[in-house]
Amino acid sequence: RETGVYDAHGSDGGAAAGRVSYLFGLKGPCLGVNTACSSSLVALDSAAQSLRRACCEQAIVCGVCLLLHPSSFGALCALHALSPNGQCKTFDGRADGYGRGEACGALTLEFSVDASAAKPGAVQIHGTSVNQDGRSSSFMAPHGPSQESLVRAAMQSQ
View 1 (cartoon, one colour):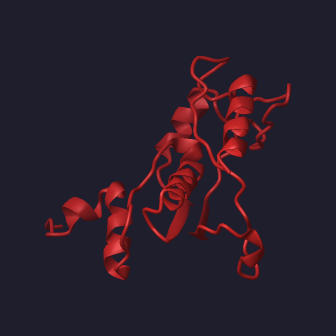
View 2 (cartoon, rainbow, N blue to C red):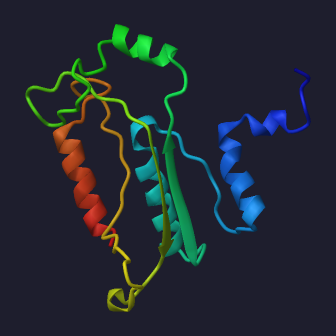
């Protein structure tokens, strides 16, 4: 197949957010986030921060996970990162890996000083925060004290 003019940025996952913003005429902060397991939550934190700083009046946060290439499963099996029964057992002594899944979700966010004036069906976000556990029991295992610190920071960011 011959390379077309859109191949260079059309195959770049980081360009997807810009293409959506361009298509719909959206303005304000625009970025793609890839942090592996926490991408959607990091994107939500970024959007919440932009709303709090009045960089925008509304934000669209989307998360997508597609498991398209089989080689990643082979590598994760060799690493013993996947749970044999496909289930995550986070913070459980029986934890033996994680389960992979595909999903897609989207939220529209608005900043509101008065939660009682929220639109019907709206859900209030009480706080967001981002951190990295640093050196802990393993690269893929959550670190209890770091997670506790993260939740405290999120609740203080209200």
